[in-house]
Length: 311
Ligand SMILES: [Zn+2]
Image 1 (cartoon, rainbow, N blue to C red):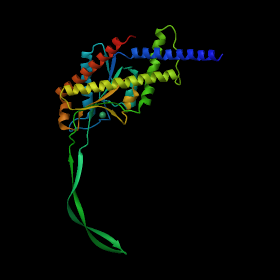
Image 2: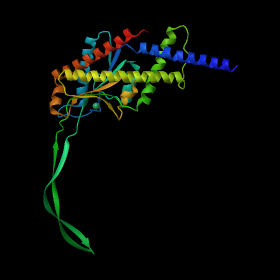
Image 3: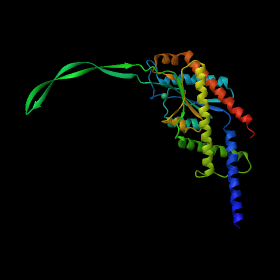
Image 4: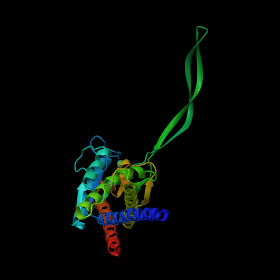
């Protein structure tokens, strides 16, 4: 009797486990290839982003993104390339994430420019005598005091080069929520393709949350590998790379999209040399070329995984 019950529990366990594994396999396959890239030009409209001496982050990001769209379309004709904006308009990051999710991209790439504040130094260069009038017992007195005089100097920050961000640690919950929606899409697709319906997964279903975890991990690994590759290509192009990084304080939009997501800081608009470069045709082409090369390598690595998989 006890044996039977155990046996039954064991069999149910196996079935549940099998469901998770077959779902995991299907999700892997569904999310394996790169079919649609969403480019998000940073800022825009009422939000100009950072200022350089003669240009704004929003304008530079848009110019680079529009070029990148052409580069990617040419290099990867079988991949769809979509934009969250093509003109100087403002979209909140919430709207941007929503647009990207509706586009059902396999990759989200945000284009920004970096900025660093000039360093402020104030030093005492001398003293002046100042006379004050103070009231004491109803009578006015004149008092003189020595007051230091300061000289404030701003030294332009010399920070330059590129960095590519992925979302920070401890932010996976939001990512999981977004991935949860993708789980729904995958399940929907599987149900329509196979004869046996996979049971409907509600939000509390442990299978659903396991699937979301698997996808979140996969997005993270893919984003990390692409971020490293992009910085490698920048280095190959002779740029100063400040490496791929996780930003501990989140970049909200990177967490809210249900696809691997990276944010590329293409250079420092606050640095006069970088600003010239970012605004030049030559610079923009070099940036787009480096990102395109990285995405081609990323796509190849995804299809290699596919052929190497027995599934
Ligand atoms: Zn920005």
